Structure formats: C-alpha cells, structure tokens
Length: 410
Image (cartoon, rainbow, N blue to C red; front, side, top):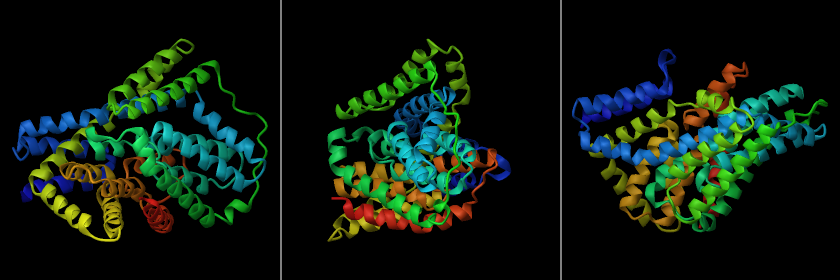
C-alpha cells in the first residue's frame, strides 16, 4: 500500500512541477501504467477506472473542439474587441466588460476555454488598447474558476464529482445559482479593489473593429446551439459526455460549409494530451482508493456531515480547496466524488465540496490544469505573470470569495 501512495504522489508532484518541460500527461500516464504493471492496480479495476473516465473525456473533446473552432474563426478576438470598444476609453469599464465576457465563455464553454483560449485574445486586445494587461489577464484566470459552477457544463470537475449522478438543470440552479452569483461578484470586487490604481487609467482608441466572418458567425451559432443542446441534456438528466462530443462534431461540420480549413485547424490545435492525463488520473485515484484513501475520505465526510450549524460545509470546502492547490483539483474532486457517491450524495456537503474544488484553485497556479495552461499560454506570448504574483492575488481573492459563497449556500 505504501508503494501505491509513493508512485501516485510522485506522479502528481511531477505533473505539477513538469521537470525539464516534460508534459503533465507523461508523468501521470507513466504512474498509471506502472501501477498496473506492478500489479498494484488490478487490470479489471484499471478498466473500470477508464470506463468511469469516458464521459469526462468525451465532454472534454467536445468542449475543446468548440473552443478551438471559435478561436480559428476569430470569435474570441471579436468578443475581446467588443469589450475594448464598449469601454469607451475607461480602463475600469474595460475590466468589467472583459470580466463579463469571461463569465459567459466559462458558463457555455467551460473554464478551460476562458483560461486558455479567451486569454490570448484578451491580451492582444489590451495591447492594442495600450493598457497594462495584468488585471485583465488575472481576471481571465480567476473568473474561469469563480463562474465554473454556474452551469453543470461550466467545468469538467463538475462531472468528475457527480459522475453519473449529475443533478438535473433545475435542481442545479435552485441550489447553486445564488452561490455562483456571489462567487462571481465577490471575485470581481476583490480583483477590482486590488487593481484600483491601474484601472484609473484610460484606454486608447482602437479604430478598426474586428468583424465576424460568415464562417465566424456560423461558429458562434454552432456554439450557442451546442450550449442549448447540453442544457437540454442536463435538464433531462442525460450524461453530458456524448452530447458534448456530438455537438462539437456537428459545429465543425456546420462551419466547414463556409470554411473547409476549419476542421483540420481545430483538430490540430486541440490539446489531445488532456485525454490521457484525465484517464491516468482516474486510474491513479482508483489505486489510491484501494490503498485506503476511500476509507479515510468517507470517515472525514461522515464527521463533517455530523457537525452542527453549517460548520461541516465550511470546513469541508476549505479543506478541499487547500488540497486542490496541493495536488490539483481533478484528483481531489474525483476522490471526493467517489466517497460522496457511497454516502448517496448528501446535498449540502456535496455542493460545498463542489464549490471548494471549483473555486479553491483561485489560490495558486497549481490548483487546476486550466490555470497551469493559462500560465504557459502567457509565457508563449511574452506576458508572464509569476506563480508568486498569482499567489499574492489569490491569497486575498480565494478565501474571501469562498467564504461568502459558502454563506450563500443553502
């Protein structure tokens, strides 16, 4: 059992540190394969873990196809440019518009799209507007997590936690709409206060507006149609993986009617490495559950559920949030979700764990894969924000917004 913990924790640590620039999925995949070869994870249990990962992987494929299609056709550039023009010379107003765009993109295309795909478009737009990019880039990263439980489709971690027991859309909204609004508003106010000096400036006029091409309009229509399909699937309690994947393929086919290069470009730029990463994480967590993690997690959750006066949700969410920053939120969410399913998903505690897993990564860049990829994307565009700078911002924003959000959870 000690060997399982050693291999698993070493794989997770190497995933976060990426020594010599070796991609995350290599470390996780190697750890998962080693567990099977060493017979620490029986093959039937490994196959079961991969089956459990299938819905999440299909969801990710569909969302990545939609996001890359939108990027290729200039939808994100158009959104960022709209924010610049509606700012009317005010840096503070530009911040509000970009933050609002992040909320919409996160809600409809998941947090990965906001952190990884919207961010480069925002960076290009604010450079054209000649303003300090830091507040706007941080807004993209933090709203990607703060708005990620607005809808079931807003974060793959939502599927990880609930698995096949994802609540229908109506129930989701009744429980999580108010906490989501509080999370979004609290994060905005904290960021706005931290950036108050920078946002007193003005925005340079940008004369040439970015316009959507006919193919871009088709891409936007495809995204909206896909979002409507997924919300309908959620309303009827259907698994979201296959509908999301089909929606992405249909959107590609729709845009290909006007732009034949779109499918090839989208398929080429999709981060396919995320799929083996997620599959490997499911296998590693399955092995850890065999090594006693499931029993320990269940004991902790039962203790939290017995606490009076709502203390359980506060302690549980903050514990999960801190663990997410220590070992990434996907394995933490998967471990918590597996244990909660055995407790028949107690609503209040499950929602508190969900909020901790989704919002907790706003503390540090190691909290979620989306934030790690956001940091890498900034480095490619020579706009680096260091992990220390992110932590200084997150140390204020995350605890305040998480506390207020939990107080709104009923």
